[in-house]
Amino acid sequence: MPTAEKRAILDELTEKLKSSSALYIAKYSGMSVPEVNELRGAFRKGDIRFKVYKNKLVKLAMEEVGGYDDIIPSLVEQNAFAFVDEELSAPAKVLKDFIKDNNKPEFKAAIVDGDFYGADKLDVLAAMKSKNEIVGDILGLLMAPLSNVVGALESQGSNLVGAVKTIAEKGEE
Image (cartoon, rainbow, N blue to C red):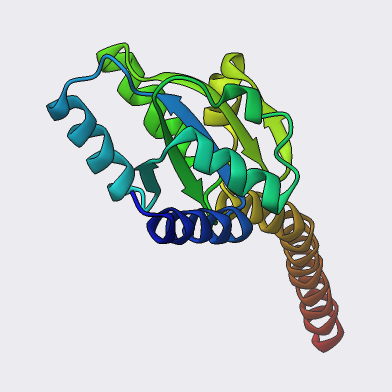
């Protein structure tokens, strides 16, 4: 591959690393072409960019961007890379489901929001809630006391209205 092509791929990788909030690495050796295609399809459904790159180019891009020192030792053998912007746990969920059914690929490591997760942390990553789920939980927690206050005011208000009506009715008698 000419140097210009390598530079273009390096630029692409650098941009993906800068714009992604998470990077997952999976060893795909030993997988058949249909299995790889099925895995790519599963990632595509989740709107996750999943691609095979040469480890050397990924390492150069990581060194250029910085902050990937912990994951660089994972860049051995045949690897595929998943880049994520929003749903940081989505690749872990896809990998976990696929591995459960096929025993492949091998999850190697991930960097999620700057934190390193080793090969033994796939279950932890898959159990993480998405940002939308977390926002929903927070809103639910914030709304619960408000609902309780509104409910209490409504019940107090109805008691108050009932008491006023009773007093008014007794006053008319």
